[in-house]
Image 1: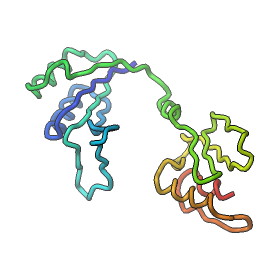
Image 2 (image 1 turned 180 degrees about the vertical axis):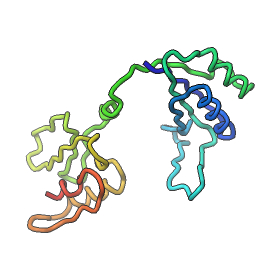
Image 3 (image 1 turned 90 degrees about the horizontal axis):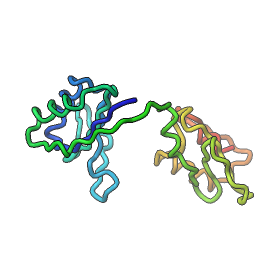
Image 4 (image 1 turned 90 degrees about the vertical axis):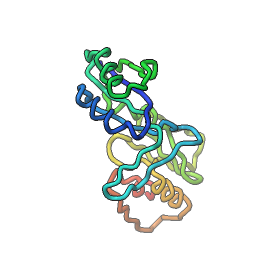
Length: 183
């Protein structure tokens, strides 16, 4: 069992809050855009060397051992951020799981182009599309499931090509999904 502490804070408070939580025993600290899944969400892509850009408002979550003193954590944060209201802090217990596999529950079949499908190994593809090309992958096995935009574009492009008798090289460094789709 684990204890997760979540709160929203300003970017200017991030570093000292993160350090205080680590000093208080945080095993992991995660920073996300507080506006995630809203029209105001802002992606941070390819920051420059030495840059650590952040969002204006950050959703911070910290993971602790289950027996961590909640009142002690609350006091650490209130001492650090006096303007913080205790109601802004959310504690939740998280059961221990096989984390390397749990994320795959959200991996769903994806279609690329007219015929090409990527299916996770644990979902049986339908049989009502006789000309469908089905590629079955274990999404946790390697990088390259088709979710990255460049891979998705290549898969869609491959679906539109006639590749019988042709040679193809997959220059990727993961699952070989492009090579598999070209078969």
